[in-house]
Image (cartoon, rainbow, N blue to C red; front, side, top):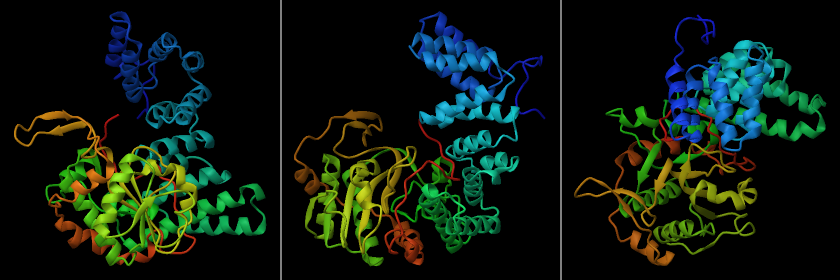
Length: 450
């Protein structure tokens, strides 16, 4: 069975309808952006459909994208050579578009199935699209042991696929021995050690769980040693897991639901013996509102976080979302005693410089009660757009806590016992157990808005 349709086949390409739509967009209103949208869909179903590449070059040139247009033209000119498709895919990985990189890297891999760099980049791209087992499969066809980065990606994919544990343990031991004996160049030794430690810690957390569920609670813990307090998870009806494995896609919160999450945070810190002495909020308006509300729930003093005052014990650092932590992330890499980083929202589709120890929810889009956004009118059940609340942060925070907090019976019944059992492996508990960057990599698939 062929991976891609050959141009000489008589069978119509599944990309033909997308090609037609792209041509119509260019002819009718001359809308190159719309044309590119159709072409993306075409590449996804058949990257061997030649005419898509000429249309992509034409559309990009109309938009001033000369360099990208040249990449598509070079692929068309050398259509049976893997290198131009590798360069296309690598370009889109560099600009952060893993989804668009995949079809070009798949074609490059089909043309050169044993090429290690191609398989490595394809494995990186598909793992970021929640398909680590495909990444492991393509690397297995190559001599991946010839490159540390390829071998690391193979074992990372293996871990996310729950395969080859003994082989991965051997790779970790061998890598550490190479670092000790000088087999790794000195300039790379520190980075290699961090990568091996990450892989080993993930393996340890997986062993502690036993058999993980296809649920983001389990895998976020395995990958980062981090906790989540609230899930889009109606497992009795299998609705939440069929959408995004416990993550939210678009969610508009109200005061009651937000207060409920903050109460669960307080309960988590109490039961897991991580109660802080003060709350420090990141210096932006949304984080200030959340931080002041958290401090009120916990009955603690509150102040603004700086790179200087977060680095110490018994502090709770609060952010409205994980990206707000970027400016102080370096000061938070190494945990201190009873120091906890909390983010109300964890963006699960964008890489982040730091993974919080505890997140309220994982969401692609999360509208806070005081922000403008689409909300469902409780009387009409219609979506309405609300205006932002511009009152002082302290006033909004105080009003949040006048609501009746939304309870979550599953938190006491399932979530809290899960983290209690695994407490010693959570980030911030063991000295020197550095916090990790966040990536899209996950074996838990999920629907999302582009």
